[in-house]
Amino acid sequence: MMINKRTLICTAIMVMASCFACASNGTESKKRANIVLIMGDDIGFSDLGVFGGEIETPNLDRLAMQGMRFTNGYNMAKCNPTRSSMLTGLFIGNKRAQSLGTLMGKSGYRTLYSGKEHFDTWVPDSCTAMLSFQKSFAHYAGAGNYFEYNPVKFYLNEKKLSFEEIETTSKPYYKTNAITDYAIRFLDETKNEDDPFFLYIPYESAHYPLQALLEDIAKFRGRYKRGWDVLRAERFARQKELGLFDSHVQLSPAMGLSKKAIPYKPWSELTAKEQDDLDLEMAVFAAMVHCLDRNIGRLITKLEEMNELDNTLIMFLSDNGSCAYDKNRNSLPPGDPKSFRTLSSAWANVGNTPFRYFKQYGHEGGSKTHLIAHWPDVINPKSICRDITHVVDFMPTFLDMAGGTYPEVVDGKPTPLLDGTSMLPLFQGKSRPVPDMIISGWTESKRMIRQGDWKLVKPEGGGWELYNLEKDVTELNDLAKKMPEKCKHLLDLYAKWRAARPDLPLKQDNKSSKVASSSKNKKALNKGKKGRNKKKGKG
Figure (cartoon, rainbow, N blue to C red):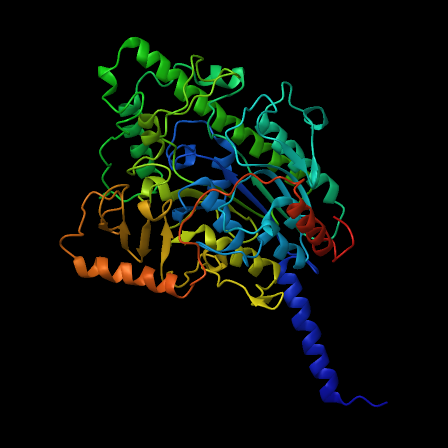
């Protein structure tokens, strides 16, 4: 067979172009990037060192300074709605919601889960860790003891574990360390496979009860006797030095919640005994965050040992602002393994520097998260992204990376419309269209609606407030009475969004604890196992 000269030339050009593309990527057949998604619990915007805090978080600081920090990252202001939205790509959904774990598995990723899960009632059982991730070590909901196996129970895939069956290197047992142990174990079990991995690690730290390892508490004891007024001002100054806020941004007035055991008052007005007790309280919280950071360092080391760090997107965020609901007090001091203490609202106010309000609220103190992205192959070091992002963006981002698709129809029924868009352009230093609308706040009583620079938000028991966040990010100048037409526009926008989704639940609430032994879950489990193992016949 004769091959003409033109065919040979075209073939040569195609080969050269292919070789050039491979050379420009630095590899001939580089696999898709791995993804490690890490979530902290009830950690305020400023509690990390790289976001202004004095708590030592060297590993998160490293990820941030070698990667990207986001100043406009939003969550859903509470544990369960944030986790629900992040794993489904929906602000609020219904029983046809799809699991990020399932879709990443169908896209050719090994899906791994270690930590806490907690959902709204609209989330279907098929989204649970044991049904949608190929390997999982998970407990449902939280507020359990960090040193004992009570009342929270762990499941390894679908098997309920006894305390004696938990394999951990931590002595004594400490929940944060155990979660990392299983995450590393899963990485070891998949390190020789060709497929990339998606590892999701939702820690419970630093959610109450305030319990930490003694050596970590000792590290911080005494550091907080200077008081919340001084520390909050210092954090705000560091935030400006770090480039997180412009010079015109003002620190919001200090606040607490008046019904709590120790509401806000100037530190100088407290007795010496109160100051010492509150120093211990904050020292325990700081110890929990520091321990969490140390465990993230273990994960970084593992990725380095696997030679996967540069080809892995690591993202870290927390599920909401700092928790101010100081209602769990007994006679034991914080830190004691038998205690059940929460953080005082004035310390939570420090955590949320420079913003107002707390967890559950749609105000910036509840709905804005510190957000870090580290991906050396793509993200430039020391980057700061000021674009608006939301946890609903994670599903389209990861599917974009995986080359996967979000199904329009499942089992003959349409799936809910995704509310987010891919963040890949932002990682690359580019822009993307501003979201039409984002929402946050726990239930309609604390709802937040944001479009561009404009934000409508409702404090519990109050009326709507309107802020221009470009000029007033700490929400000091309420424009609602001056601009009723803007308020109406945002309310209409939200109403239109809900009207397009007539099967949304009328209200949000906590999903009752999953019980794997129930007949309903057994049926779902069997169906889920078949689906998730279909690709390779293993799980």
